[in-house]
Length: 324
Image (cartoon, rainbow, N blue to C red; front, side, top):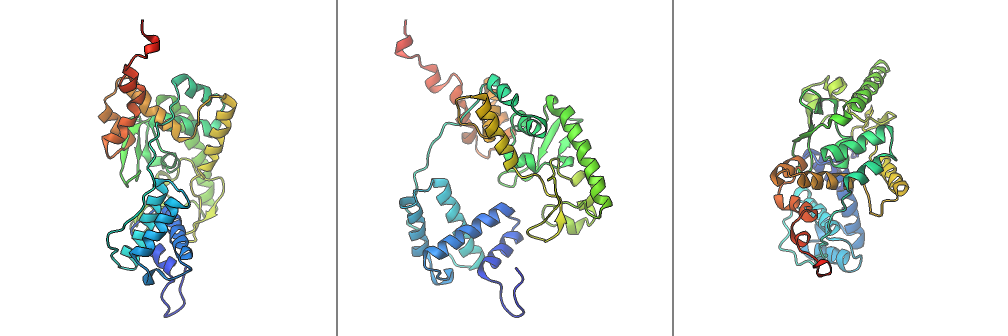
């Protein structure tokens, strides 16, 4: 990404520099750059500074009408292009006239308590521990994999979720059931960390500019990932060799296999555990505002979708077939 002397960085490198300056996640960086490339290719490789609102509208309309993408995907593309024009090219786009993709309204898939336990029977070791955290603490998939040692508070039996969705921290419970397995996992990680330090490694990526403010913090035990990768790899941004957290796809594949073996006739993913967490808490009588805080939802309306399994709405209406 280093430009030649006296030569400005290429457009996508400018995008990456600006994203990193604003502390965007690496996955967001890759996604935004991909959308910008697709936008440029769609318009015959014209430079974006020669285009404007009409070209952005045409691309987004194409995504909705021709490619039949979801509303979420179209919004993602729009966010990438708005970032390009506003943050990199310093151009304000006028009001866009876009054909929006229809936003789907899905009722989340929820497992019963017995189905959750049935699924757990087909998971083991680290995969089981991670799935139990998703269900027992209501974690999102990446929130689980990004947990650091300092985020686990055994004394108060709580987990601090750092930089969750929307860059917000929140507190959720640490299930008693997972404590022995979690302590065993941390013991293994500590041994590996000691070996890494002896071999000249042992550093971990730190958020924002903490590495500059606290030069030795990246080597400290408290900052290490609870679920580190099995191998040391090269950081794609800094080029530093370090141990990142595990790839989330490992658990995703394990859950898919467990779902097939359990033969539960539902479309199950890792996020299903979080849906089940919220629904089961509401079924147990917990206040929806409390559940909202545990989930980290900005708007309580987002949490309201889980009331579909309670004795409300259609659940309170008796079918005429069941009438006496």
